[in-house]
Amino acid sequence: MVDVLKVKKQDLDRLHQHAEKFLPKEAVALLFGSVHERIVTIDRIEFVENILDSSTSFAVEPMTQYRLLMDADKRGQELVCIFHSHPGKPRPSGRDRENMNLNPVIWLIASKKNETWESHAFLLEGGHIKQVEVKRV
Ligand SMILES: [Zn+2]
Image 1 (cartoon, rainbow, N blue to C red):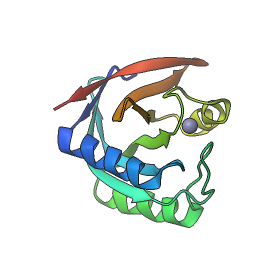
Image 2: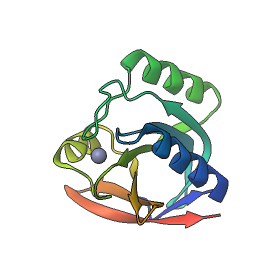
Image 3: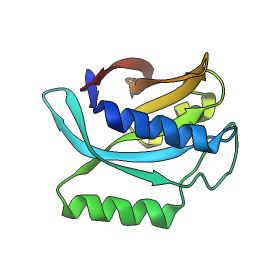
C-alpha cells in the first residue's frame, strides 16, 4: 500500500500553524495529491472547519468535503491524507480508528510537545494501525 508520506516543509509548517490557531480545539485539513510506488505526495492542502468544535473529535461538513473531492477529481488529484491535531497524544483515538476504517487514507496527526508541533502519519491496514514515515522535502 503506502510506506512514505512526502510533505513539503513549508506545508507542514502551515498545518502546524493551523493547529496552533485552533487550540485547544482540534484543527482539520484535507490533503490532496497522488500515490506512486508506495509514496504519497501532497500537492494541495485545504484547511477546513471542525464542525464539532471539539478538543477530542472532529468532523468536516459533508457538502464542503463533497465539493473539495469533486474539485480534486477535476484536477486529477485524490484525497490522500486527512490531517487533524490532537491537544493530547499524537495517537489515533478510538473514534479516529473507526473513521480510518471509513476513510482508508493516511491520517496525519499533529500534537504539541514542549512547545513544538510534530506530526505522525498512520494507516489502517488489515485491521491494524501502521505508522507511515513522514518525509519532509
Ligand atoms: Zn484524533
